[in-house]
Figure 1 (cartoon, rainbow, N blue to C red):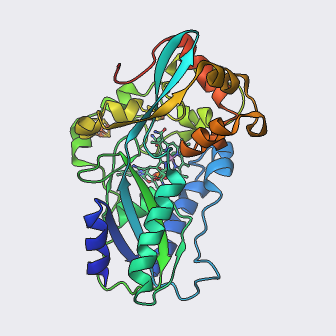
Figure 2: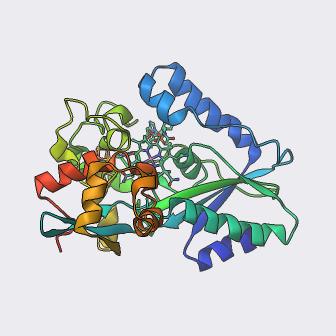
Length: 310
Ligand code: B12
Ligand code: SF4
Ligand code: SF4
């Protein structure tokens, strides 16, 4: 059955691994151990890591395995019309269609496993750790997970299933081989979040932590470091492992002068025309509406509009 599962995934260009449910303990211990040693900034932990659930949900008491899957995802380019200029801006892989990608994989798994009466449920786990431990990927020095043939441009999705796991691997934490002789991401990261002092990212220094949340950027964060509508691509663009993926950019629409002005003013969803709401939903930007005025104004002011330039 696992053979059928993974060949069906491969047909769509996805890659996956399965591990027995017993490894949940290992995932929990690893995160808890780092937490108790004080490796995480307190605010960061509370905001971003506190949601992990290291038990299968009550709806699936007989879960036997965890399946983790990597789905290739492109960068997305959106045009914003601002002060008479058409500005192409980039949204990094995974933001657009995040939930949709998840749903697609869920439906596919339900189709394959449901035929055999195996049930499944969503897992809220540290997905990179699971992917690397299961042998699906490797850690880059930038702490992002790399999968052969996909670089770091992929979304990870994971599910509990009732499918028994006969064969699996559980690897040591593995850096990518290429990282042994490379530090390009470390040198490029503007904030020092990637540091030679330890492998674990200083996530509280990562631009993404700050440009995904509402409020002013902290005073130490130079707004010119901000480089995408949301998120950051500096450490992935410079990575040789992503060389062949950099031009995989999907164009996903345009906001007119009036629409861009509404976004920049921070108008709430119920104040926006329905045509705009549809655009925002398609881009999965609705949840970032509150951060767009700040993020866009920085990009509009710095005049460094796109990557690669068009
Ligand atoms: C919290 C979070 C963030 C935080 C913190 C990121 C982080 N590195 O922890 C912030 C907001 C900053 C963030 C940013 C981004 N994120 Co994010 N994020 C998450 C989330 C919710 C949890 C990540 C996590 O577990 N962090 C906790 C730390 C402890 O885990 P870790 O990063 O795996 O750290 C391990 C290594 O340091 C390793 N380690 C320690 N020492 C050593 C030594 C050696 C030698 C080795 C090899 C390893 C090693 O051990 C640690 C685990 O114990 C996941 C979704 C999920 N459910 O997992 C998405 C997720 C990780 N994010 C994702 C993405 C795409 C991003 C961004 C690339 C988005 C962007 N372009 O802007 C950036 C990348 C920033 C970066 N350099 O990491 C994807 C990653 C896909 C991939 N290819 O890996 C995920 C998996 C979402 C998804 N479902 O696809 N994210
Ligand atoms: S830029 Fe170099 S060091 Fe960083 S993840 Fe890529 S290969 Fe590894
Ligand atoms: S995403 Fe940006 S800020 Fe975060 S580690 Fe990478 S380069 Fe540094």
